[in-house]
Image 1 (tube, rainbow, N blue to C red):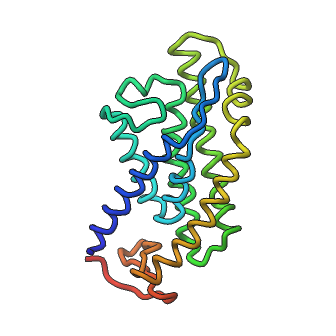
Image 2 (image 1 turned 90 degrees about the horizontal axis):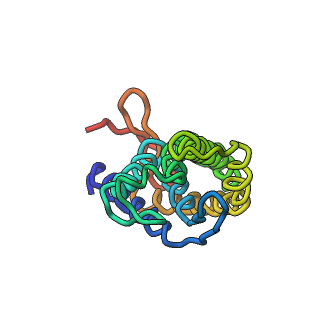
Length: 212
């Protein structure tokens, strides 16, 4: 496959995995809004750690666009009206979260599981912050229901933070193992330098090649 074809394949594959993750869920009925704890965060994080910042974020963007187009790939359906749901901010937060984790991981080709796990935590914080702020805006400004920001943090962030940390560790383990496999099998590109050349890992070694 060409490099472009590989990127398209990986992007489509991870967008599909994120969609599948939406249906592996636990519904948590809460007073303000029913929370859906899903496996999406695992696949979002894995896309960033494995594919890098831009490619990981693109996977999430493709998934969200598919859902907003009307396909029921979100945890509670799909369609443009989903934007007005308080929980939509957590989906939006997946984009910068994947980018942040990927930006850290792609600079560390030989990252251990512990370092991959460390790279995932800033992404998780961004994901939670985006979700909480969006929830606050929709509830207070659109719905007109006064909800303190502290309540949102306690009920919709802290309640799932431990399971999400476990998913961070699981994604770190998988990312390290899959990266080794991809290096051995197809010379997986892990980083692009600012001069337009690509650093490609092939069977544990690096070589330069010009961008086509």
